[in-house]
Image (cartoon, rainbow, N blue to C red):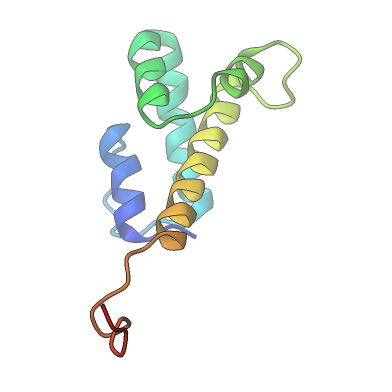
Length: 108
């Protein structure tokens, strides 16, 4: 599940239009898939730039766009975007800096 902050990053980066404050993962995937389909048709360079900025691996992008992919290209790319966002959240949590309260008792 995404926090509001992570959801808002995806909504902002991909210019998703929603009037809901919070979205389920399925709703987010649906909106993102529609936008990615539009971008594949009309803004492919911009889409690839966003994927690069999000650090989605190139071989995964190529697979999602290939004719042998299980999902349609827009669905595959949307899933990759959400997967990468989940990885980023997990990494941030893993390496989150400790607060002063958590460090209390340590001698420097």
